[in-house]
Image (cartoon, rainbow, N blue to C red):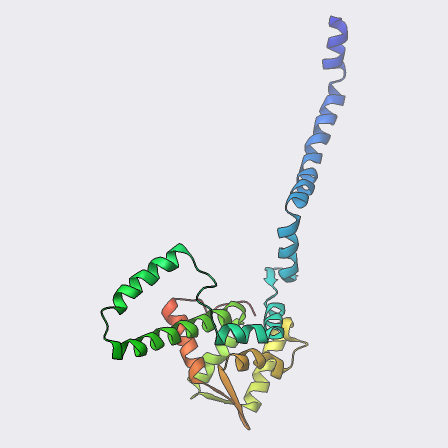
Length: 222
């Protein structure tokens, strides 16, 4: 019996070494498979958002997100024009409402309506800016900045030249037209088109001010 045990432990040592080495090598791909199975839903969602791989990493498919946002523009417009205060009703919201109600009681009747309209307009404007910021390209923010730096207007010829440069530097936009690229900015009324090019609007200027006030980064993908 002892000889048998010695044989199993020592005589077959090369076998056991190879066997455990195999198990160690196998554990890594097996663990990947297990993780893939357990987290297949979030992994799929992440893969759906990857636009392309590059040597410096990956870019999130913001272009697809922006296109989808524009495809659902009726839904977006409804949100922009009529935000229901009860949609996200919660205890923190009710606490703030109680505080606001106490503050309103201190305001005279003739001033109360003006105060409420101002607060509602500001809330809707910031909600629209948050929606715009969610999918806007960094290059589009840069364009808005350039419009201000150039007196608020850029000619059509300048736009076409600079968009061609953008296409050469970013393959995302190779199949895009300039009109399609500007569509998102037009939708949020950040720019207006005329016969000779585009101009930044008051909404576009306020959007840039909002980014600065909120400390939101203008360095985004694309």
